[in-house]
Length: 333
Ligand SMILES: Nc1nc2c(ncn2[C@@H]2O[C@H](COP(=O)(O)OP(=O)(O)OP(=O)(O)O)[C@@H](O)[C@H]2O)c(=O)[nH]1
Ligand SMILES: [Zn+2]
Image 1 (cartoon, rainbow, N blue to C red):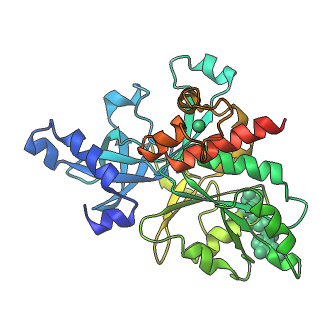
Image 2 (spheres, rainbow, N blue to C red):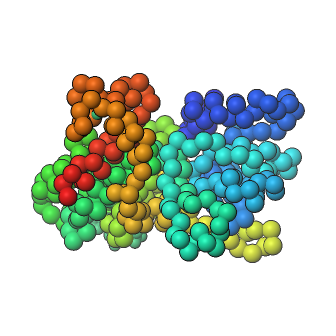
């Protein structure tokens, strides 16, 4: 494992599955493989980054129609290097976190064999949920964002931007605090750069960050402030495909100066439409059925099967928090 890959978000989990992928290969085959991260998605090609810098890659021919191999922005893949640079993507390593969108019924009928979800972004560690102290402020929507982020496996962080709109933002911060005592809150004035140190301090090492929130709350302004330069506007022409046509990409993973990575993906901005209440916690519900008390809250009760699973490392604390949030919302109705 090298620090170069670590700066791109590589970790022991990916190392393990990458080694498992390479294990059955001959030493010659193995020498042609290298792990790369998807940093740009075009229609036919992928921009990838790894030990050999940034290059362009395609899906391995056989896998193109297999459906199983559909890398998303942020994915770690196995690249079979071509002598002239670039190469073919052979596999997607298991994801640490997944932002997916369920495909609608009409889309499913058109592509009956296709997977029922479309991955929007992979391996995002941290999501800034951005709101502002004005008409955008809607606790219920923010709560849905929090749950959607927890569902993905990433950690939600709340950002109250446009702090300059009021002399005192305490009331809004207090409201945000009701979303969960464990949630970190940052107050920013993105246009001036005020309050950004706190956000920057989250971007240590290979942490991958994404931003969500409604239109106009300042996601682009925050992104540009963190990158120290304007991010590529949506639909910017980045590369040419083999026919010489220009292809556009609006899904990009940026390297943040000073550490960390940032995924800019308009698709992520729309996750408010996700129905967090419909989120599936089947495995936790099965465990909950084994708790000693029927109305167990899975916090401190004796004989709690859910807590036992968390303690045994079988269930993540984040996933439990998302489950509890869903349970308490259902109880309130
Ligand atoms: N007063 C004030 N205005 C801000 C601040 N941050 C951003 N803005 C302004 O808010 C407007 C919207 O900002 P954007 O960064 O484009 O918002 P966005 O969330 O990216 O919006 P979409 O691209 O539509 O999703 C712009 O006019 C910004 O200049 C801030 O901290 N204070
Ligand atoms: Zn329990």
